Length: 222
Length: 235
Image (tube, rainbow over all chains, first blue to last red; front, side, top):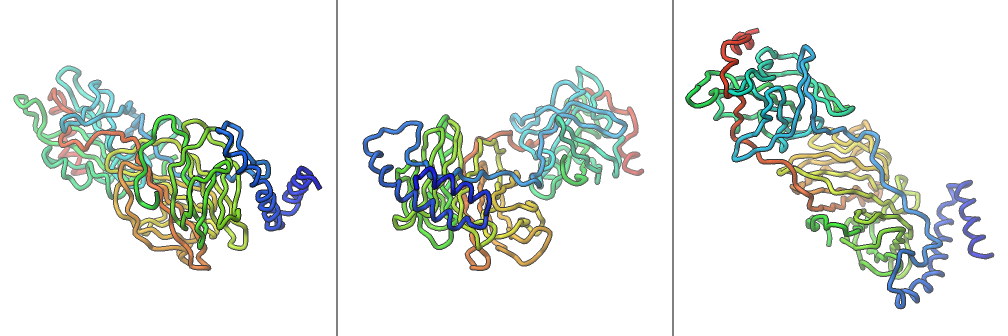
């Protein structure tokens, strides 16, 4: 029997009788051994090319694939507060220890070192202006009206994740970096919205406190 | 070559594979297109990186000169893949080769991309991390990934939706930061050969450090407008 006849017979057998795979693999191994001599002989003289040598008897390997339960994790692009008030979310980096939120006070900034929405651990941190000397009242003035139990939604393209507000706190600015919830990237996943509040000191150019809203995810991201 | 050493970061344009040896009780020699690339790779060890030409390649796993597995796979220029020799879901079946392809992923400071793959002789499983199912219903030949903070996690593998029998673990797994941690569950619990092969690749980092200050009010116009925070908190 020629090799091609063998192979077509093996293929037919595989289709019909998956239970026979053991003997089929044995036959493939035998073919491999037989063709192995040719492959080794030619490997000394050939400098290699795109055509693999001696693979006529080898079947394609299985391809690993993601399981259906793969979690969605996304960088937020839009934030929706109660009352359908929405704002664009832009990535914001830390420069000299200060988070650079978007200049446009109607936009808010996602700290680019924080968790993406839907990650299993860590805070997704979004900060925005309550006001600015040049642009007036900011989008996050609305955080003053947020209360425990409210729903906040993050979106990006077709992805979304809702959070339920679990705490609204005013903390001194200097305490933000060491706060147990606000910026930490360990612990259960949460959404953290940050703006300014407290007493405004015009001579120091800002407020003395941060308003920190924490929300827990309602299930997994979609 | 093996275990928890961090592989070099993605070299631009290099087409590379790593070989993961998931067959219990064997030391395997590996050849690509008939040319030897690794010798005596022990169970749960990783060999590589192995530069290969883009296109259709053939990988051969052999033991003492006898071919154990031989399969072809395709790889694009600049791509990476883990080529895994392992047991099927049913321990009575034949070993097979599964190729997991992947691209570079950006990982923030202090975090790690954790990719778990099921290549063991067990049915679909849940992977419990710190007593929580983080990777659910994953079958032989599948993988799941998550971004996690750098830490040591308690990991165990159980049947999907069940607490027992425990197929593997619990074991402590320390993930490496700014890296992709590819973890392969290998072996057969009935023969007490369950193990994990860990392949860590340095990743491109992204994102900035933790801020010490968030200044989001410079105008003072919001003072006295709307409900005060104190009123809000009292509700």
